[in-house]
Length: 219
Image 1 (cartoon, rainbow, N blue to C red):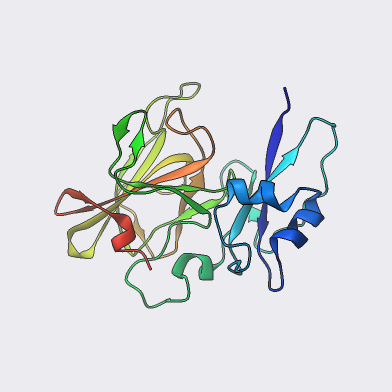
Image 2 (cartoon, helix red, strand yellow; image 1 turned 60 degrees about the vertical axis):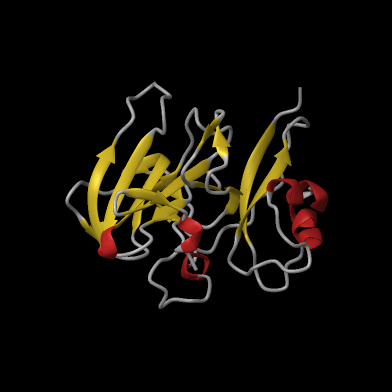
């Protein structure tokens, strides 16, 4: 059976799916499968998942991301995301996206056969996850080492207007309960759990303690 490794690449000005595929030795059609997007209009700053084939034992060299920087707790590298990826050209918007990546699941789509009141954003492992707005961390749930249960590491942040954002399937948590956070401040990194087959951030929004569609709030 063939094995695959997902590499990360941030789109630069002038890039096309064809040119990116050529850099990694991957057909552009394969990139499109993991990153639903328009081949003619790639957003600069967007992070793409590149399915690099490992059956041959050789992996093309990965271009160095511009904003990749060391992590603060484990010594592993964290894949940074551009501010443009978060605010989508609208920096004054009340809420920003929590990470760069691809929307893989919309509000109310099923997870494990059950309707999920949130959305899924696929991104490479260790991609930073940021608070969607300024607020206070009200909950940090850390998964037990060696166990893959539920939504894994989870962080919840309370914002103004009785809105709470909820981030799950984190690889690690970099904030603590009661901490004040800024809009766009890193609170953790993308990971995975038994709820997803690939690295993906699970994001929920609550308004007046009721789940709401995050896409109605994000720019």
